[in-house]
Image 1 (tube, one colour):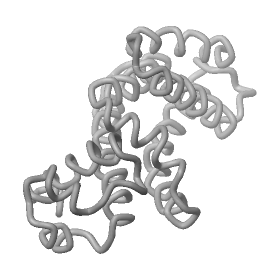
Image 2 (cartoon, rainbow, N blue to C red):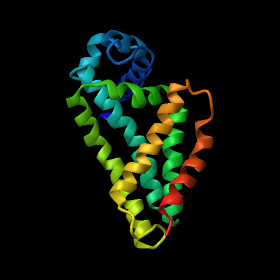
Image 3 (cartoon, rainbow, N blue to C red):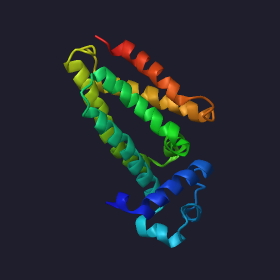
Length: 193
């Protein structure tokens, strides 16, 4: 697994910074190599192209979200609490890595169609965890039985996504983490039985 290779992760971390500060199209491989403290050629030992770096950034950083959520899926808590923790986790990961927030909320959206499809494939696993929380809540009566979990997933992820994008566009001037309970409360008003 590439994740176990320090230079691979070092390059990805550097790519997040360079892409956030310069934009994807201006993020030259040489800038990424310099930020990572490696030779330009070293990048090509791990990645085929700059697009491959962006996809890998998304895949590896999304793994942080997935790993955190997988842990909370093992907890003996209600679906409502699980959903609250899912939202808090999403906000916390991006709040703690502001460069990553810029990359996920702005730069990934400016990529070409093929790149977005590859990114969406990666996102499916994360959204499947949200689906399982929603289905659990519907099945056990915590959430309204008439709720379509697919529509609820889109609504929840869209709300979270837009809240974080607004935070990024406002130059991260306020505490994103304080918004997580409010977002959860608003979502639950539409979900509760």
